[in-house]
Length: 114
Image 1 (tube, rainbow, N blue to C red):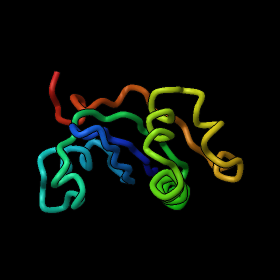
Image 2: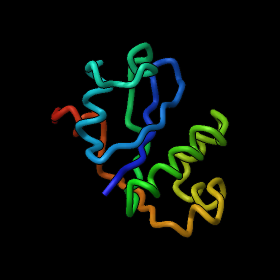
Image 3: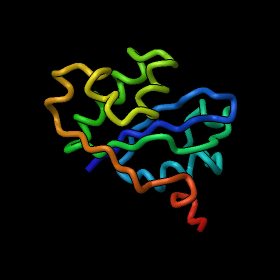
Image 4: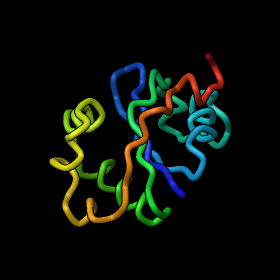
């Protein structure tokens, strides 16, 4: 199982990533662990905006690439804020792969805060 996630940073920017363990990865970004992304080292995470579960790491990689390279800031904002935006913003050939939006993962749950 693999996950694609989008975090919103304090400056309003979005960072998109991929992980096999999303909670561990978000914690690495937030705590600026040596393994965190260069981007999140200089852009503090404010919230975990969206998470999708993919059927394979390959499928997750394709979605992550598309979000990072093809979507503008405003389209990323729509993708995380509008639940139905996925079908409008993501190409059909990617939608045919298996993605499921996960709603119950938050930044707080990743950091083990109540």
